Length: 109
Image (cartoon, rainbow, N blue to C red; front, side):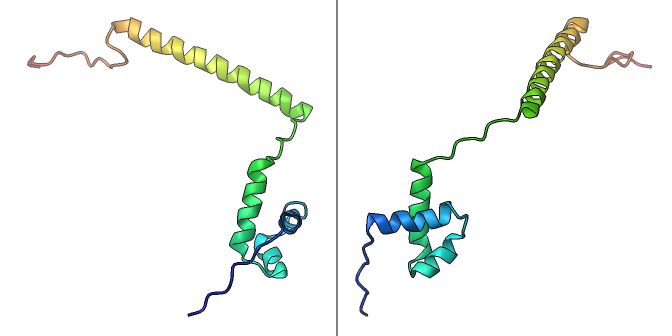
């Protein structure tokens, strides 16, 4: 069984293939088919490119910043209320959040 020799690709070819995927939002499989290369190979090149060149996170719009600030303030307030309620439940009977039923265990009704 004869194996085909391993193909070698220039750095320029790799860069152009990756840019066809990244800049044009084209599927890896489609670009690989056009270039007559294995889609796994192109996928590896694209993955490596994206690891080395992460996309910056988009800036928040002013309305999103306001909403984020409101949500963060609400979370702080709810956490404080939650802590207050936990402490109040413990202080009320020193047993935690339990319910009394008006009878004692072992007593006969």
